[in-house]
Image (cartoon, rainbow, N blue to C red; front, side, top):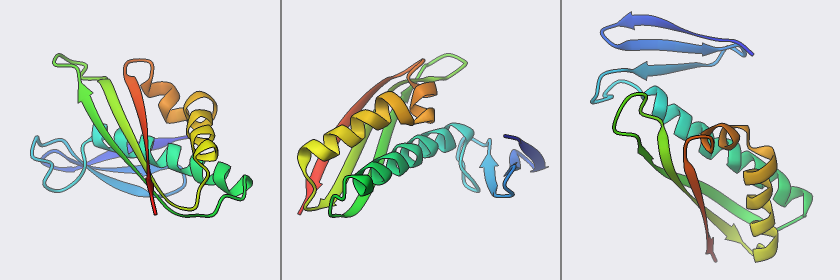
Length: 133
């Protein structure tokens, strides 16, 4: 896997993945033109675990109709300002078995989610499931 970040102006950078997708990073504290790198890490955590959970629910043939994963993180006060605590909230809709959903989240947490595997080295991750419908 490869990536690069190219300075554009001020504190703006275009970051490009090996697959050709680009993200605008903004190093200004206001982040008015793009996400900060740490925001992208948190978004990556949400996306990674969401992909795992949907994949597992599909394999279990669970009738989900929607899934949103939200995250709130606390960072260390001194550099490097790593995440120290993360709260992930899974909002699943449809007639999904609670056991199937709990199993999917646990498997993502303990086995499949690479981003969680890295983040948990510095942060305690809390997982919450909310059922809609």
